Amino acid sequence: MKSKTPIFIFALFFTLFVSKGFAQTGTPKGKAHLVEFTNETAKFKVPEGKTWYIYNVFCERKYNKGAEVESTRILISSINNIKFKNGPSIFNQNVGQNLNAPLIFPEKTTFELEISDPSGIKAVINYIEVDN
Image (cartoon, rainbow, N blue to C red; front, side):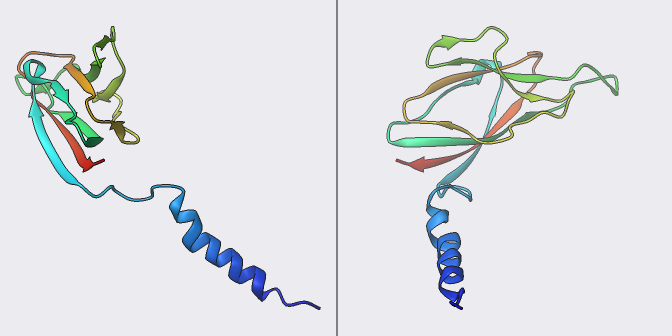
């Protein structure tokens, strides 16, 4: 009867070392940013030689005399000058929706966000900027 030890060692080696190179399992190394914005300042451009990993976009709740009112959504209104009508929602307070995975934008990408209730509500975008 042959020993199963070599097969076990190969499987362990493959699992621990080789398969880790095929998928990114952690947060990329780079500089983390938290940037506050409003609809007037929600235009962004990824610098040349950089990549942005956007992990979170969120905003404050709107209240009317102490009572919470309709939820606010944050939408992507354009990417590289392609306009979206009621574009993809990346934040919705009503359903507790937020990004499930990072949005990854390569160098020179331009994008614009839109807060659905523009009455002075501020939002924050959280991203990691890494060198290419």
